[in-house]
Length: 270
Ligand code: NAD
Image 1 (tube, rainbow, N blue to C red):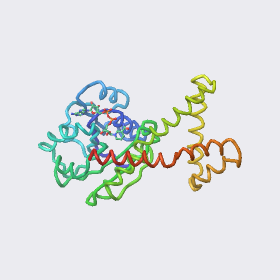
Image 2 (cartoon, protein in one colour; image 1 turned 90 degrees about the vertical axis):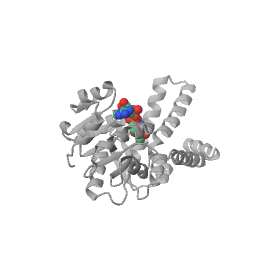
Image 3 (cartoon, protein in one colour; image 1 turned 30 degrees about the vertical axis):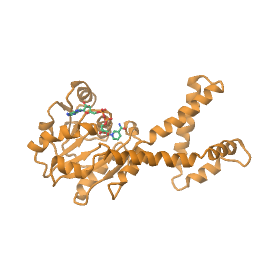
Image 4 (cartoon, rainbow, N blue to C red; image 1 turned 180 degrees about the vertical axis):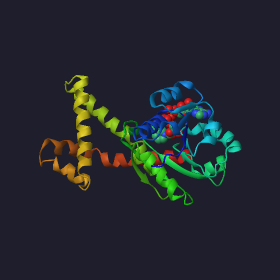
């Protein structure tokens, strides 16, 4: 991947995850800077990864080739305003990981001729198992697209969407999805405890079953998920009985409704 000068505005969890992935992949630490108002998070990042830490968003954005906007959506206008006045964005690439802020809004905030890519990552990026959706308007160059893909590939897998609305689908299917699985696992752990296992054992049982299932899915990329399910479901057996209850309780329809609710919420935030 190209080693452009990159700055992260915002030193939260997502910035940390991406910086960790970049450095682990051999991106030169001296080409990475991070800016945030409070010294605590950014200095911890500087100490952990040897990158440059600053409180000066403007100076960092001016000096960088790539500006990653990694602040909360509600902070975005305040962060962009001073940049618009003092930074020449021609020749720079801007990446936003904020949910709910559309490209058209960035044109308003930072100027029309911006090369901008929207990225929707998820928290497994923190352990290199992220799934990120990316969207760029047509005028963004192939070089900038490739750079953005490589950046997010340093913390997991990437998927491009052709239409900006597709980002909301990525939110429903991947961005918010870790929490769906956590809820499922929590419910299983609770029931295992009610069956008499101590909390640690109950967690281990569920955790290993979940990561084992995910590993089987990954090891068999061409096998439909329904086939994997059928392979562990003997007719008249225990698994079949559990699945019968899930289906009677409309689990698939509930999952569909929940994902639609995530999309609706993302649309409201736009
Ligand atoms: P966070 O709250 O952990 O971090 C936000 C950072 O922004 C903090 O370091 C804060 O100091 C900094 N900040 C606040 N005001 C600033 C300013 N004026 N100038 C510079 N820095 C400033 O948030 P996070 O979880 O890392 O999320 C960051 C962005 O990533 C959000 O827009 C969020 O929507 C998006 N995102 C997060 C996730 C997730 O799962 N955490 C997933 C996808 C997208």
